[in-house]
Image (cartoon, rainbow, N blue to C red; front, side, top):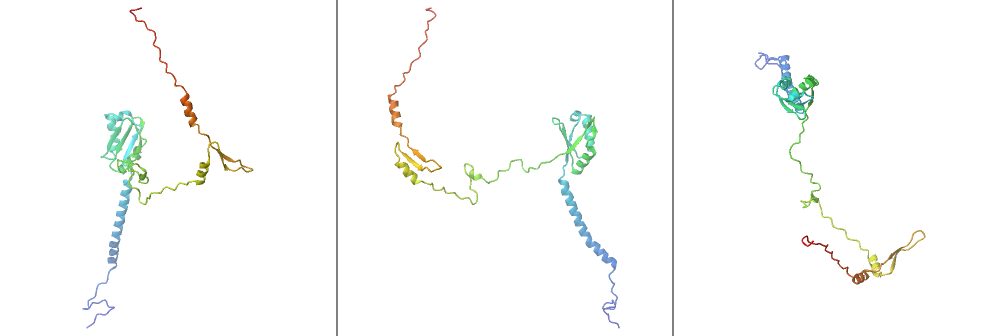
Length: 240
């Protein structure tokens, strides 16, 4: 009775175990590779969707015949040019600006229509198509100003973080100057800076007070007499 050897490929009961095939290994590798490819396809799809979301979905038509802005066959013919690219299309007519806004359901249709119909002739005029630029402002209201200097507004709001009250500086008092001024009298002079060979001297002359003389002169002046206006001569009609 033979025992199962290590190199004979037999099992414990003497049966031969099937060796793994090369085809099975390739299938396992393909199964492992499929999830990676699916993940990359999802990433590419997300990037493509994000790129398309940034593209405009509307075009502006310019240089149009005035009959396009009136109800009739000309308008229907104009709209049929764009309905071949998108069935869910809408039109906005701005007669005062001579413009037509064409709204598409997706940016690819808008780009295709712009490429095919730009500078094409319609009713004797060359149509010009431009992509409509959208402006995202987020809100219809203005944003509040930055709180950089709001503490200067009256009435003041709460001061910013870290703000401290600034103490006023101590005024500088020149006691020497005050002492010199106190010694001055009417008609006297005080030399602030002595003269040198190159600079003159600076001398302060104290003027005499003329307030008392002004008051006396005002009291001596006679008050002007108010002369009344003379009434004009008038003779009634019944006396003339």
